[in-house]
Image (cartoon, rainbow, N blue to C red; front, side, top):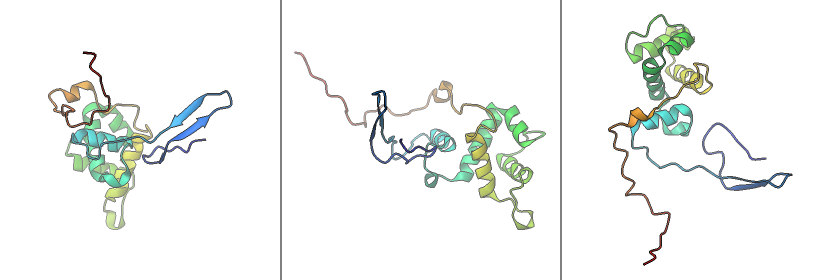
Length: 160
């Protein structure tokens, strides 16, 4: 009954849906801060599809994916793209993946946009495997802000 998609921005307004057995469901738009302050978190959100496509550079997100997967899931990365090693720079691996997957333009030049889309799609579709992009240890020593700049949403009363 509610329109859904695996991209942000589909739910534009609150919807109330009552099922035949009397259960009431509410579908509401999600909210996100206008700017993600912690850059790695922004890359993770973009790679996972939680940020609209026009808000990030797919090539940079694909580079982030390669770097993260090389560190955390090297076997899965090598298996998906039939790589014999993960040596070299992220740029070199990106180009090798593009070549292996046939993302080429005239003259054998890598189509960077197509290569980035392939990598992002492979991650989102779990073609590389089931994995997580962050763990609690990723935030040790990271200042994510105190929340002091957030508006008060709960009012409390003093009983004195």
